[in-house]
Image 1 (cartoon, rainbow, N blue to C red):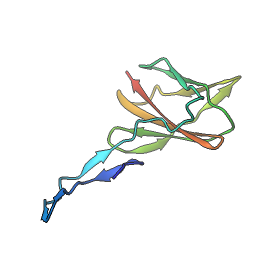
Image 2 (image 1 turned 90 degrees about the horizontal axis):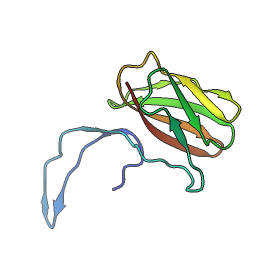
Image 3 (image 1 turned 60 degrees about the vertical axis):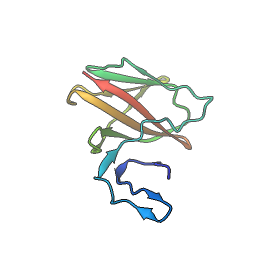
Image 4 (image 1 turned 30 degrees about the vertical axis):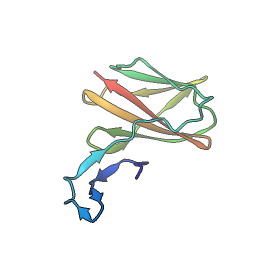
Length: 115
């Protein structure tokens, strides 16, 4: 089985006729980037304190979502200035986040650290 989206997962192992109990629930956050290999997304600065800049997004940005390491999601407003998208992250708690951005037909998941 491959995990392709964030969620809460559990595992059960099977060997021949022997089946284990299910494991405890584990929240999973996908931190891989689903982008096209020819498209390089850059996030600056990382770690960030006040403003996060995202460069390299191709196509119209259709939406953005912020996911913390507990799996909670919220909206994050990206403002475009020339070819750079910028977001105010000053109010976020310290920690690791995944920014999920839909740009054109691609979905990008970008990990960053808020300090």
